[in-house]
Amino acid sequence: MKIALYYSFLFAFLLTTQISFLDIIFPDFLVPLLILSAVVVWTVSLGFRQALWYILPLLILYELLASGDIRLLSIYGILLAYGTSFLSRRMLIENNALASLFYVASIMGGAYLYQGAYQLWVLGVVDVPSFSSSLFQIGVAILVFFFTKKILFAFQSRVDTLRSDKALMIR
Image (tube, rainbow, N blue to C red):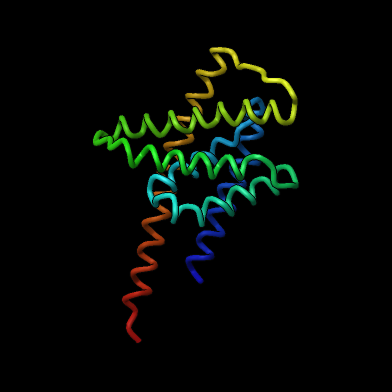
């Protein structure tokens, strides 16, 4: 029960931060960077099969809160998670800095593909961002990735502690 409550608080925090903070400060971003960062971090830390149980509700809740119906992001987030899992298993990167750069690159690549698909799907035309706008988005993505990684790793270690305490509880 505690673990479900922890996940509810985490989902509420991620969704509130994305919708009330990042979408307001950066209105030009058509991509929910915090949500995509959470997808990549969960996939890297837990693996695709286990992360899918957390990714799918997060994506569906975000789409329902942001637009009122389920659109392209849920399918795209699952494909991004699978692609990240596939590439992270094939490419063993020992250096932490290179691994972080790879994950930020996968978030940004996923963000640009989603932005193009979203513009084509909804607006009917693809608007390519300028170079300075792209650099700014990369900088914001790096900050959001490290923020998300720190929070989700701390959260996951707390949940693992709760699970081990529950398993070791003697009555």
